[in-house]
Image 1 (spheres, rainbow, N blue to C red):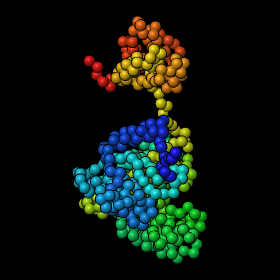
Image 2: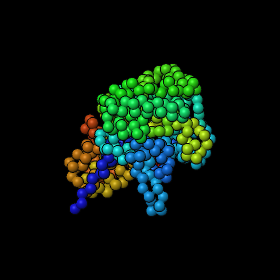
Image 3: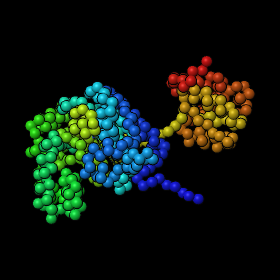
Image 4: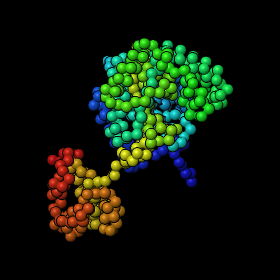
Length: 425
Ligand code: HAM
């Protein structure tokens, strides 16, 4: 007999955790829709070339893409993130600007699977296109901040930097390369390899020897143009106005190559440092153009759902909701009455479950207990002969007999009125 398990880096999100995910998405939607962001659902796979715009030298593109030729010979890839897809959608549909969208869903990266690092992981995020104003940068960051607060997280640190405009960044990369090359001997072999591909990525190294070299490396600040510098100062001032604390880190470069000007990351102080980035984002002013669209500025962020929930676990906040139903129907005649009564309760807007397989009264009451129901409706031959049933308050164990036709009125009095799921004539 074959026995199957989930692939490395993928997981089943079982109940009640999946309910926690849904609630996470609902709170995120509510937070960003309050600021005018509309939901977008891009495809899960598309032309691999779209994702190459993230940067050929990044790990995401060079090593982690789930790309393949489909049966029609098209080279496609599962999305490793959604910013490139959103910019492709903008270039394709040309909506009016400012265009503000939010998304949620799975992304795929062939990474070394470990706690907090998966091959299929979910993100929620927003992207706003067509606005240069630094106030938008502040709005974007503040929405992530608000969301973390709504989850109840208190150990989140905002780390921020500016990578300047395209020219500033290129000059900085040259200076950094020169510095790192002249200190090659002190770097680890891994960092020397990264240096050949992408000097900026060396700054991400957490190895002790590299950290010592990085401490003396040139920083981006002295390479920023006056405009980029002014923009950044205004962003920082805006954050102060909204009383959002931040930590400036001139070595923050992020793992994707499309960033310009404002870049930021959210770090959880409750998680191990290897996987403590629970979200990140920034400006990507040239990206739409590289995807064939008009020159359009853009900014956004994505928050890792899986990792943010690990941070919630570590802080003991935003736990999985306890699943329960309003009513559990126990039918000790033959189960057919439960069929009708459960259906009627559900149609009236309440949640109701029941037992199957004509189990004993004792077994059915055990199920009622496990279901977390407020009330059990018990149907016995004796009561049913006079069209009645017994209602049991599961917490107080108090019971009373009522007419089956009055059940919904009873629930309305005790649980509040609900919107019917089906209008019965
Ligand atoms: P990113 O930093 O690659 O940025 O990913 C954002 C967040 O997704 C990370 O901070 C992390 O929480 C989560 N994440 C990334 N990879 C994994 C993984 N393998 N397992 C679990 N969680 C992971 C982006 O994706 C950009 N698109 C963000 C952005 C939007 N920039 C501008 N707009």
